[in-house]
Image (cartoon, rainbow, N blue to C red; front, side):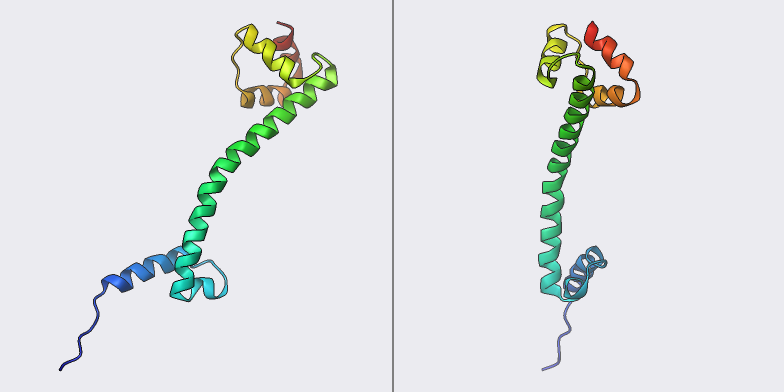
Length: 114
């Protein structure tokens, strides 16, 4: 019997995975089985950390607002400040409030006094 050569589809799939893991170190970029494992692991970490990044930024904004509020003692706490903003229907998100707190504190004091 003559020798049958394998098709190009499996090779194309492996090279596509190799391109994804080209920057990894050691066997993680050379051996096919470990390449597939590391690709799955990398994608899982990326998916998990996208949510974690949102969480961390929210925590950062809250701590920045809280620091500025307690510095001037407008309110005793961040939660009271946010509660009063919602009561007065001044619906500003935490990202914008944190930027105002850093760049223009007097503006934040004016917002809180309203």
